[in-house]
Length: 469
Image (tube, rainbow, N blue to C red; front, side):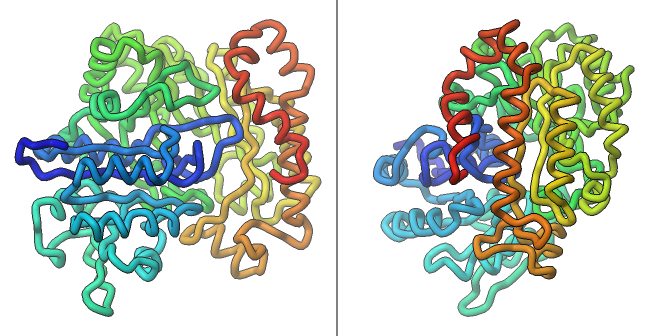
């Protein structure tokens, strides 16, 4: 326990089930064993340390901490402020875990995160002890809570005042100057948590997550949680390129174990990619990196990205059904994404393809077309997500209004039942990973495609055939 007189703040991703991942844009236990860093809590921690607070980050699911062990860690640290990051599946668990600790320590508390931002009043209706939720970006709001500011004066805060729930005015999104002022998240995460707990099949291991900007320049996709709750709409507020390059240099010099960086911006635009790559090449930094990309980037910028040591593009293809793409406001056609894929491969870049099943208007035939397309364009790795309708997204509202959600809140449509959706997702994995093209990849590069992913495959292969997902 710190004894230096600083106010102590503990950032908590609470225990739930082993390897549960609440830190991504959706929460689940990944079939591939993927575990992203708690990136938004990490930026909060770096920000609070920059203000002089003693901060501890506990990511219990990634570190296999059960409820008793996590409780002991929190009680030993004795935080003055406990910050709880919740998820869709775990919200009731998170509240039930945190509140007795808060009562025992008589400490302050607040709930944060994109899921809590869907409906902060609904979240507060489930609490007995916690009285505060931050809606949207939460660094400055938590900082003001820590310094003891009057609650009505804290933008983005939603709080209980007796039986009433008060919603303060929103704060403008963080600017370039404010984002640059946050100390590097890589330094904070590197000293706070075990970097070897975080992995994904498409990246070198171990890797590091960072953000170079907040929000999505496109900002229309109907199903995206962060776009509709955290940084909304067509917003893409950027760190300066100089600041990002400096962090790459810090990672290279101070964290020799890190083999690559994953840029977690919602989508790395062509303009941003070109600016960053030119600066990175000029700096001489050779650290590999990956990013999220829309499937419409041109060949010239893709070549530039390869020259700047880009390794892998995470691409949201979603569906091969043009009607579905229109319904979800994807804004990119199948033809465009097919050309993009050929260009990326020609440039020498790897691709992780994100496909999804369970969109409004989708049919079994449309899902099969997506499976066939995925096998045809043949990204290096692929996932086939069972769509999660997050309250607060247009996708959820459409499905709910039209009676297309089952009792578990999952897509269940007259023309494409939940059982058929699940069967299609399992078929997609079998079709892609047992396809002769993928088998040939494993034969040509056995370590990269098989032996290095043995743990992943030991989970994924049985899941392709079990009746229950």
